Figure 1: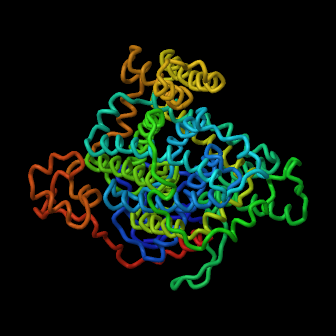
Figure 2: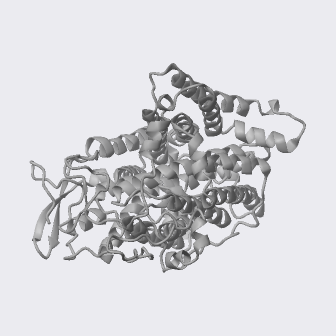
Figure 3: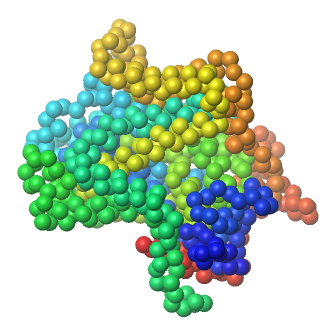
Length: 619
């Protein structure tokens, strides 16, 4: 069945397929879902259990990797400031390789044994804020000589101990915090958490993640505001102004032979295109010596040859392994701060699960699948801490949105992405390439990325009644306090002196973490100030994230565990009461049991020719 066309004759979404389509589960007759491109948006080329051709899986997997790469590489680059690694590009490349490797492993675990939806795993900004707060404590403040490139000998034992001791402290805190997330997920307590957390708690928490990182964005962009502004303008141009403009590209297929297809390339990869173009311009300006060669002059950091030796020094193959930076250490202050980020990450992931199911043609995730997903994310954070990424893992909202663009909801595509990220982590040259991106280009990307994160948090207020003076007070006071208190504490750290060193450290980390201060105040005020559930937005929030799936054949096919695990467990009646276990084999109307494996996907008949998808992803 050929996809319907708009009146102008263009494909009605980014990529068109000639093949079988799946109806989105929540689409009513005559209802058009809200997507960025008008058209028959209620159709999917491949549903969650379908298996596209292997070459299509690889190409779409590459696209998902590229969609997530901005957030994945941003985290090590920001952490390098707190780890005293600004002038050690080789170690930065090792961190990037490690986070790619671990993200790939966590993605495979999540798709296979976790929520079992096509959702990518990667580094999380919710753990970045408490990590930077921990590294800003007096005992972890970078020595002055590490800020001067001429004084840094990256191979000296003294310098190596400076950054590895900080990394080991982060590792231990993340690993202990991840145990809490595993417990909440596998025990089913996430449902209890969600009862008391509504839009007025989530909005300031998520928004302050982006707002608290303004200094990192300003520092990077300030090295050359012209280059940073150009990067921001290009990303804005591609993602907002040109997203509905198709690009005609030549392509070949068996049916149509050589023909022209129109692909919405700007909508798919705006960040990648913006960074690449700015990077290329910086390279040209460097070749012709338009940018200054004197380190003391403004604009020097925009040159692309500052880390030219990194590509030669980086090994072709690197194999990240647990404990590669030494034995992790644990501090109470770090653990408590990380817990605040872990809770925020769990709440955000539950929303991503429902959105992913909606866009991939799957029924809403049942409780056991959500519990398993949160538990596997905790396991992913444990692995990330053990490998030493300096961060944890979470579900990526950007890739959930990509499902709505490509109309391919198959989880096998995400499996391909996981394998590709593992491969990228093994090739050391890949991480080295990303470290050569000029700082102003990174700063321009940060300005867009952190701004979107802040706005995404505010968007949760759509569920609450913002005509209510109660809600305006709760949100406004929480946001403002989340900015004022951490800023004051950072300037007057000596004000916290309880006489107990450990307690001082805990309070210092918590009170300098904006997302904790704002989220905690929002949580307390929202649950104590009188207000109806409708006014607080709880009813609308629960309706948007309600678990209305039943023990159906369709749900079992998607969410049951693979390799016959569900069949084995269903034979033991007591295992059904474990929160993360499927309740048993549902019965179809003809009396046959569901496919407990949930891993035998349905192959669309006719083997459609996905040529238009291939050409877009190949770019």
